[in-house]
Length: 571
Image (cartoon, rainbow, N blue to C red; front, side, top):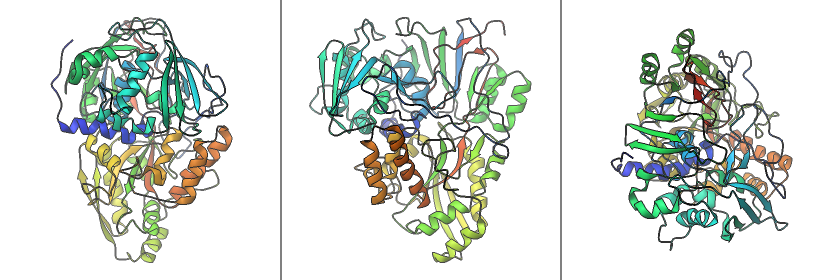
């Protein structure tokens, strides 16, 4: 295996930063209340409403061409600025999870990403089933047997415990504080854990907690032997149980993966997967046109028609992911709810959609229509500059104000920040609001989202642009006081509403899906009525594929399933 140079402190911060948004961007999935026994997830999933006329000009297409073949090399041009570090979790935000984390590793649960029709839910991963005791705190996971990590060592309950010790037990010889921070929200409610026998692992939560299965799909399991053997150099030899094993890793340049012959579902169809960091949309477009890559994440939207005419496949589909602007409530002007509401009414979302050629939906609430936490009884924020002006005047800003905004020029899930933020700047300018745009590298933005505006490094900004989504029930915690940094994550604005805090706490201990969703809907909509953030666009998750790519299904999730994908030789 080709080794890589160690990355700078920035990259270490990026791992920590992923913990900030991991619950938001890791997967777009809906909670299913666990039953007493769960060979699969329970509860009915809900479909996301498709784009309607006037919302998006681009037709939804969630499936690539299909076929019965196998083999080939799939080269993916990522929007990430660097190759994700292949630890647990991977860096580079949701894109690191999508192409590295959930390809190399699995958790006790995984997500139902092999379909496009419904919200993903937790399904069996390295645990083939689980039970929840009548006390509603004791979970028993039955593990798959006869499986190995990519390095050939045995997967068993001791290996699962090792992964938990690595991020929970500060006295453990292989405890990793960086990864502990990144996984802190996934393990926060775990009171104890233990090996029952070689194929059984028990978790006891410190209170009834209905979201554990969601946490476990992000709690990835590395090879204990590899971690012990390679120490600080582990990421150069990353080893999991996922569908693909890493064979080459050159920092800043490329990662190559090959199929795991011993994967529990069987050997994947591809011969090789190649990941290339290409943060500029123009570079991804050029790579497609030159035949250097077969798959481009979010190419320039105005080039899609041309690419389709040339035989490429444009894949889109709604999922719970949005462009958000976190608002600094620790100081004026956003410590006034009227200003926060005004800025939401000031944005012409339809004009923003036009700028990106229809590859998004106007975001009038934090989540899109069809999402289980969307409030159909609230119209959300429309474009109403007159109302915005009135609210600003009431708040004492009739003559305008100046704002400073940090934003990522690119990076995982951020769509097209340049033109979108210029459009936002123009909308606010009509109300006398001058916005200074400050470009900051994506991994630093992630870290800022985790640190919050109370942190001195970020207190000087009024707004922070970051792509997020309420993709799991756990993500709703970000609207509560328990999510305020540094004790919590990731209530970046520092927003607090005791009524919503109580509703979320009740949802965490509610195992009935309908009741749980109603409570989380109250929190999500209630926070936005208070102007928790400015949200402009719900992403349609554009990617363009070569006509050789077969059997890809675009899930309503941040992760993707490449297990059945192959490259058609005769296309």
